[in-house]
Image (cartoon, rainbow, N blue to C red):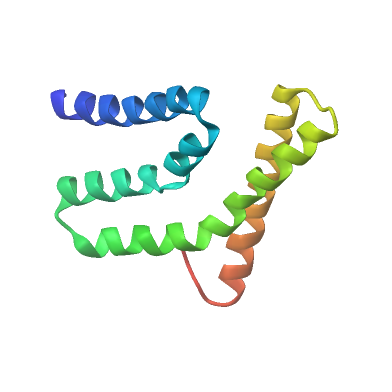
Length: 116
């Protein structure tokens, strides 16, 4: 149980740290947020838990394919906010658009023989 609490604490501290740094410098916050810390942590925890580099490789490959649709959020949110959409509604809409893009990507990959 201590191990899981440690994993959650480290992950949470990184997210909060990036948010706090972003208050002072959006550029530094953006640099830190753009580093795939979540993916790195997920791969690290997976390897520590399983010792299976094959599983880490599969995760890494899947993350690669799903990076493109995730970018939809970073395109849609500023566009919606610039149009005067309320932040929470814009965020929800951006998440919805991103979910559709994920679905499209998985569907296209499935049709070309790539299974995630």
